[in-house]
Length: 119
Image 1: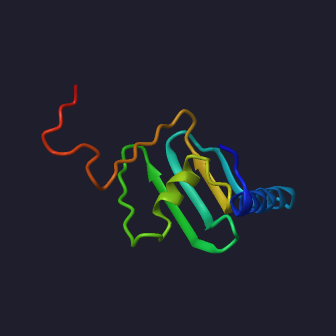
Image 2: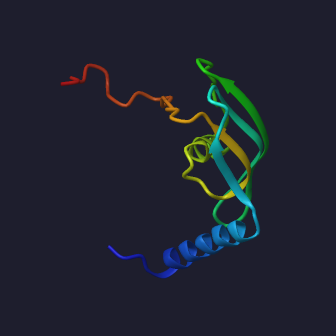
């Protein structure tokens, strides 16, 4: 199914925003860290249209640390995880991920209903 109408225009605007950020040295830099810590420095996340979603995120998590992201719907929790995974380009700041690191994200709600067979 091809994109059409407003969806295509919105997508094109989002691409232009990412290209503009990249050309001016903006955007979120995701780089290899020091091997033992996940570090976020001055991370700001935007929506594709340019509206600010999150600002001023500074965080360091060491190997084995756990974290809970809590907030109201639309606050940017899932977007922050996308940025850490390197799949959210809208924003600024630096994210350093240990080389070869794996990220485990658990949903707050159950994926399977009670009593459902896992086989």
